[in-house]
Length: 68
Image 1: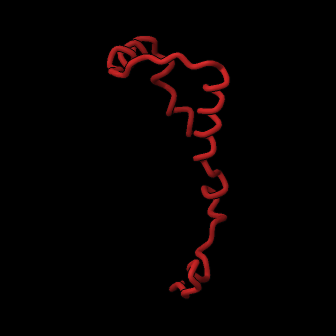
Image 2: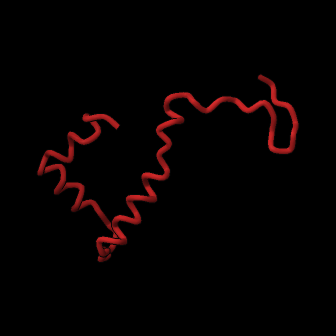
């Protein structure tokens, strides 16, 4: 994510519009729960895959060859 992705969050009026548009019920989370959610979301981000380090496998899990 780049710097441009957060521009709207620096605009107080836009932040208020986002909050007003929210239709979800508020829930209280403690610091541990928040940290666990953030850790989960970070686990969904594989920075290595963005570098193209993941290659096409030579075979499928069942041993079948793949077209290269």
